[in-house]
Length: 272
Ligand SMILES: NC(=O)c1ccc[n+]([C@@H]2O[C@H](COP(=O)([O-])OP(=O)(O)OC[C@H]3O[C@@H](n4cnc5c(N)ncnc54)[C@H](OP(=O)(O)O)[C@@H]3O)[C@@H](O)[C@H]2O)c1
Image (cartoon, rainbow, N blue to C red; front, side, top):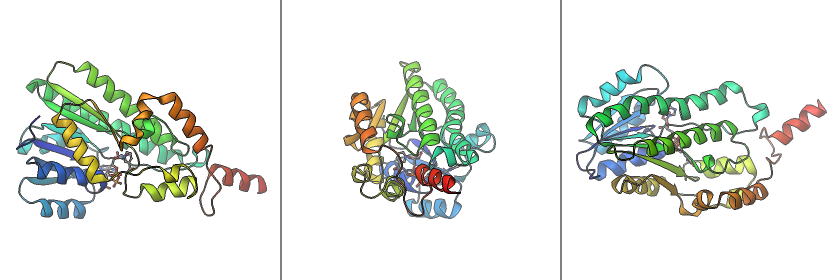
């Protein structure tokens, strides 16, 4: 798909990967609509991008998607829709507030499906369009400490791959993106979870701008899936071997000072 003058709508575009996607698609000639909750960040980014960019302040889990996607379409039909908004609250499942977990399912799984439910029929009516779903390598090899997140991203990946197969030959494409750790905060989160000396903390970390470029090229080439950094591709092609390695690299969550991990919490409860 040629991106020039196409209308690209990106959820979660106020920071991180979403902001990098906005810059990447805009630089390539697309008109971008940025969606997120933090208006000052969205306003600053559209100021930076200038003509051909606008924003909508929306919570992807709130309101009627039919209505606010209608607002998004006021500047033209949506050619590319990127389900990127997401949250991740890692920690030991047994002690995580289930309300936080359920929120992860709402933002990372239910909202993207609801939005796809509005966008895809409109694309089908035009027999053209690309839906991009940003899942995670955690969907392929769920790591310790990310139970709710892996459940949400695994669900999103399953949905996305299924829909891609279903829409074959319709003119509407679905791209499933599996990012590994990306440089906006991911390394620190990994240290907090597994410890600085763990294998997990030494794994390659990608860059948001490089991922955004890969996503644009994958849309252009009508690819169905993208794993970035490439280091993580074996998670798809050799899942049993990678699962075995991950089990050995992160056997559980270490007890770190000040971090509420499964082991430290179980220990403190026993002592209490
Ligand atoms: N960073 C990584 O290592 C990594 C790895 C694999 C997958 N991913 C996935 O990549 C996507 C982007 O993550 P990121 O690393 O760029 O994180 P980020 O910098 O925290 O960005 C998340 C974006 O989602 C938006 N968002 C969160 N909740 C929202 C809601 N209810 N409604 C609307 N927007 C919402 C945030 O905007 P507001 O707060 O302004 O609403 C923000 O723009 C996520 O789906 C994430 O799971 C990230």
